[in-house]
Length: 180
Image 1 (cartoon, rainbow, N blue to C red):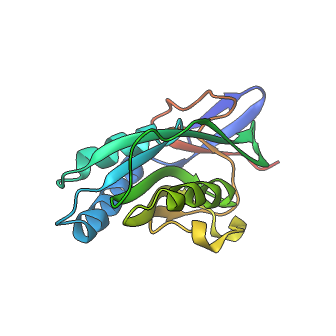
Image 2: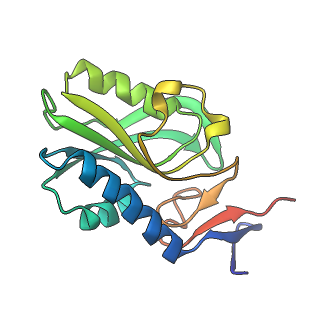
């Protein structure tokens, strides 16, 4: 089993890069089916979703554009319960189909908060695509992803965009914190 270490914590490979590629393609296929005659705006939640967004856009044969927003609710390995909008969305989404691209939806606090902001800007539709979700941790039903690569239990993960103190995003696979 492949493992990595960060500040004394051990992370074991949890989802291989091949499995990630398969998950991304499945999400892309579902979006392609649902948006055949539309041109959605994919809103990337920085920084974690950049890897997923990039691979997802490459797998989408439909016309789409991209926008970004930087939201933050984590400090290290734990959610703060508060959402900071460090860089707000600059794109006009009125009467547009929006797909928010997120790396993970766990408690749903960030997505619930962001969807409220988006609704106030009157898009035609709002959907969420997340690579991972933790359904047992979800506190807001409206935050559940419409498109999801995989449901996982409560685990802290790094790699493929997921970070710890802004590090480890560049790992090609996803690693889970080893249980004590």
